[in-house]
Image (cartoon, rainbow, N blue to C red; front, side, top):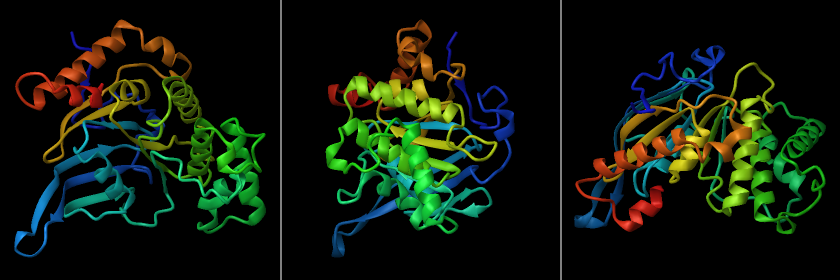
Length: 306
């Protein structure tokens, strides 16, 4: 019997989302009938290219959802629309009771690259998001930034410049900056993709540990996480739920609950070698392979989603 649980309804009681976060809070995301087209060419050759086609998705507050698929399937486009950086061509996206818009102080966005300002010391980089949000005093920003840097293991690097840090340390600083304003929604676009395998696993474990214990929240509810990745292993290890996407045009091909118990941060290395993990990985890979057409994936595509 397959270990994957299909979930077309995101309020399914089998999903590993704490009952306290099942309500429609500010971290609740609704995507309804969303398409997105981009204009290509000029003059008479101008045409609209459909990048995303009729996406429907409900993410309850406090759920960790991974969007996985090969390049060109619209993962980052969907993330940018949730952030309010791009408007849908058709359809609606709401966060809580409000339409997606930018700026939205309930949203934290972490990119694939750290995007730290090289002339700012690490502690001032972490303060950056709080500087544009109302209600943070200078002293409050500094205390919060130091608290977040302590949380990610950078307590000795408050006054270092980004260029003095390793790549892994810069990503830790970027995590601290994303968490510092205490957003309800975390949007993460392949945040660990540029790291070597060992550092990647370490940061996955550290971030998941913070999220699972609500270590960065002043409230009673976990953050909602929407996490973009090409990496099936990463999606299975971290998420409550995996959305499988296909390209040309981008669309949802599968929506699955991950039946691994929480907390799991301390067990990621062991989970990788379990029969349960291997079956999940095998099932997802062949779902992608079958949905993209008859026969095997090309070698390039296999490497993208493996």
